[in-house]
Amino acid sequence: MQLDTTIAAIATAPGMGAIAVIRMSGSNAIAIADKIFRSKSPKKKLENQKPYTIHFGEIADGDKVYDEVLISLFRAPRSYTGENMVEISCHGSQFIQQQILELLVRQGAQMAQPGEFTLRAFLNGKMDLSQAEAVADLIASSSEAGRRIAMMQMRGGFSDLLRQLRDKLLTLTSLIELELDFSDEDVEFANREQLNQLVNQMHSHVSKLAESFSLGNVLKQGIPVAIAGKPNVGKSTLLNTLLKEERAIVSDIAGTTRDTIEDTINIGGITFRFVDTAGLRETEDYVESLGIERAKTKISQADIVMLLLDPTELVRRLEEQVSNIKVTLTPQQRLLVLINKADMLSEEAITTLEQQLTKAHPLLEMLPISARIHINIDKLTHLLLEYGKQRITESDDVVITNLRHYQALSESVKALEDVKAGLALNLPNDLLAFHLRDVLRHIGEITGEFTNDEVLGNIFKNFCIGK
Image (cartoon, rainbow, N blue to C red; front, top):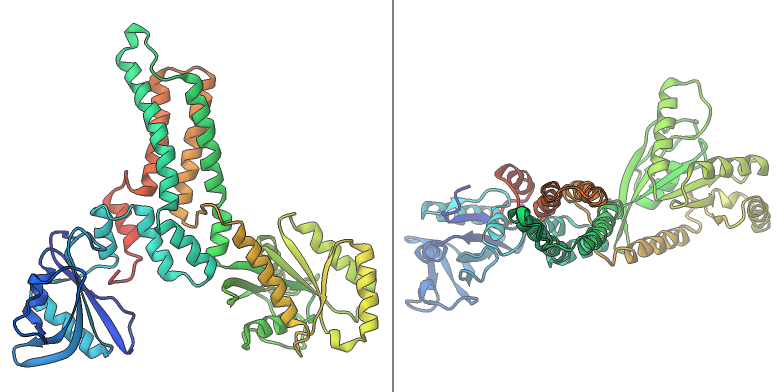
């Protein structure tokens, strides 16, 4: 990317709408806009106007008028990119958008690359690298949890925490390296006890941040919910009911679902990722057995496991199904036992069944439903929503959602453990300084103090053009 050029791109998504926005950034952005803009006010030049103002007029090339537009002006350094910027709001016709963009290119602008506006904002010091990545996360967010985490990161919450830790460690690292210059005089600038306390504090903070990735990834991608149970118990019917579409094939033939079927749904601003699994049973069918093994894997990865039971089966067999599934779950996973086909039994029979299951498995969460005629489906979605809200409240602190950040933090934890071991063994200052610099480098990779063109290219190539 040639960062001394003026770039232009359509910033709105493809398709026809009421209005569209075309952005331009660079030292010549306002001058190029002046060449094609005719203000409704006589002799009004954009170059002479105050920044952060909006101007009404026409986009024209000679006698040919393309559209009536509004132009917003931003001047360096107080703009998104830190450069002069112009945003043209035109009518939403794709033809008009393309014609104006081509006109800007003919007047000297260059087509922007994916993420180039945000890259320029990063390189011009308007945001650090983690904030720049949060811009893409905010655009891609499909739930309240994803939006909130991305917004917190974009506003610098994560960066501020890392910067505070890094500044403290940088000060002590500098003192240790200063001691190396006076090694012959046996001078100690860095207090070892203070350094040990800081390293322990950083290890605790960085480890906590790294561990938050599992929660952050769940909130970003959707809370995984596995629908489990024996064949023909109604798992696929329940999935279709929750998604309100015929997503899975429903059949009376046992073993119809031989692979996992996944789809997402937003309930109350929270995304849930439902997985319909193959029926759990003993089988000699090779393909079906592969599906069952995959089902067990998905169940182990789920935050919520919804076990469907057929109330027409013997209670002893139902108790065994609950026991078998509970053995495979961790204390962090939530088990919801759904007594499906509740329309086939009386309320009294369902109550008796619930009491018998609760006696065998105390504190069991149960709900009678009918996936076919939608009995208590609203109660089920309410339970899911309450769980989702609970997970969101766990994310009030800074939460990591980016794999690159998680990898850098994990490497920082390893380097901090090396520092702790070095302090315990009273290693020489040069070795301690090496490990401390390693910590600083990994943390700096997150915010962009340490980076390279390859890393930047990998990050910004995933952005949409125009952002």
